[in-house]
Length: 282
Ligand code: MF3
Ligand code: CO
Ligand code: CO
Image 1 (tube, rainbow, N blue to C red):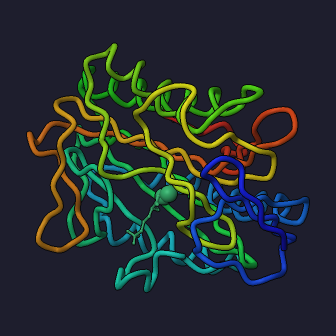
Image 2: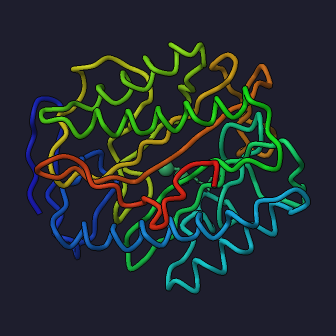
């Protein structure tokens, strides 16, 4: 394990077997880490793929959570959210104006809903964190447009990260510029994050900001990009349950998330759907 500082940011080389701490350093992983993340990310994507036919009017979010838990365990992993800071479910399911961290319950999906499902299997010590939007039955055009643009925001963020010499701020700048050109609000209270052996690690990957700022992206960095984009204003609040985040103006909100690794030549997306089901229509 090696520590070095570049400007204000500390990077730490991780070989894959040692204990890593949430000490504010940005971890730089080697081939073993990439292999671990590939496997965890693939399982995560397969779980989201399997949910496609199940996300229908009449299904409860608890039933979907049960499927996520079972598929995660069958895949030899555990849901990283189970027991995380007191959270007792295997995924987050966020409907319509819920921005993120919706708690599975007996609530039933209905025609016209837009739904985010966010899963994080922990497989052999590596976290695969990803989420997608699902359309329930017939969804109004303006909601479908929000979902499309949000996916484009994620992919533009990934593109920005894959350019040589990219800095962390380039990601948020790309996302914010595109979302605001559509007059959508970019949520500021939640961000992407480093991950790997840890679920939530440095750096914080914000979805709005200035190009050319922040730490330089280096090969071996693993992090998520997970923009939350609101049809209305950017403001959010967290409900009494301490988890469920909703838009203050009750406008619809959408989110997509991938876990990625920086390579010598660009970016590897660990959580791409093996069957091309990365976004609706499925
Ligand atoms: N998967 C979420 C993320 O993208 C975190 C969920 S933590 C939970 O970072 F406890 F709310 F499940
Ligand atoms: Co995440
Ligand atoms: Co997630």
